[in-house]
Amino acid sequence: MPFSGLGLSEPINKALSELGFEKPTPIQEQSIPIILKGKDLIGSAQTGTGKTAAFGLPILQRIVPGKPFQCLILEPTRELAAQVEESLKVFSKHLGIKIGLIYGGVKYGGQLKMLESGAEIIVATPGRLLDHLNQKNLSLKGMDYLVLDEVDRMLDMGFLPDVKRIVQNYCSKERQTLLFTATMPPAIKTLTGWVLNDPAIVEIGQNRSAAETVSHAFYPVVERQKYKLLIELLERTHFESVLIFTRTKFNADMICRRLERLNHSVVALHSDRSQSERTAALKGFKDGKYEVLVATDIAARGLDIAGVTHVINYDVPLHAEDYVHRIGRTGRAQREGDAFTLLTEDEVKNAAAIEHFIGKKIERKKLDGFNYMYSALFNAQEKSAAGGTRSRLFGRSGRGR
Image 1: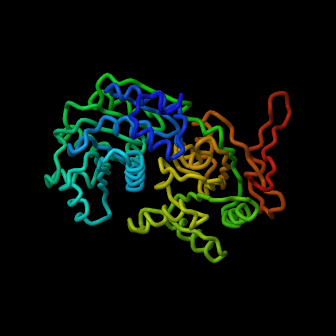
Image 2: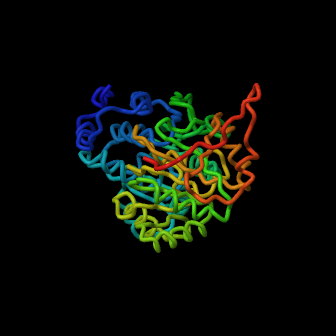
Image 3: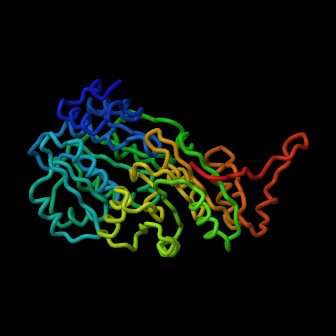
């Protein structure tokens, strides 16, 4: 079904056509008609499946131009909030609707000016929004629509108390509520009782699986050789853009400095960078100014960065769900992508937890010609298959796509 068959207005379809959007993704095709009918909804789908358009398009259709603060969209991070605001502005280019952005890390002046103008839609992070609400800079009592986006991420980041305070103390009781998430941990189900009213549920795909378009593997290596193996992977791989994930801000900065010395166009993204630096880093990576972005998990979920051909996990993520989100930054929009994860002896338990989470063994690979130092990883995990045949621990890897 084309977008034109979903009941969206001509101005919205015109904007989608100009963007080159022809066919909705499954989460969009199933969610948009439900939202247009005014029903509460829980939408669950993997990263990279178009959840922003799934809730954004039908809300834009229902907004009344000129009526302030009709819709609140809550996001867990500044980057996600800015991305959603940018997407909604593009989708609504022929509608004359104002979209306001509220997040921390910047001065209040621009946000106060926006609030005085009375934007129809507010995209916000919980902390700064609470500041404005406590100062009575805006009222949500006449709000018609509430969207809780990336809810699993908000739970992970400890935002549930702030979200509960916003919804129960400041939001209109007569509203349509939409909840979108990439995974469905049990804690999310506790939200349905006090946030949603008899919601429809749309679940697309397996929440625990890696995207089928991503080829991914573990690369065991001793700690002392992690950086050398990273460089070797970069040198042997034909890539257009690479997203490198680290567990710490220190490692992100360290890798960024070293890659700069090797003449890579690279930038770091983590919470110690100012908001202007973070915005510039993301824009530069998206626009092709930088070929490598080194980031902590601030960039793991939700960020829509088109054209990422490779993801490298310099550190195995501590939480199994984050592995799926990290490697989901590539292989988006049905394109193919590759993900490499460097695995040291101290991270074996984390790797096992990831395999348990996705219900699948992840291939171990060695890089041909790399002068590996010996590690117990190279034989301790080798298992004997049933009947006495030995399984192969490592595949062989030459150049990536």
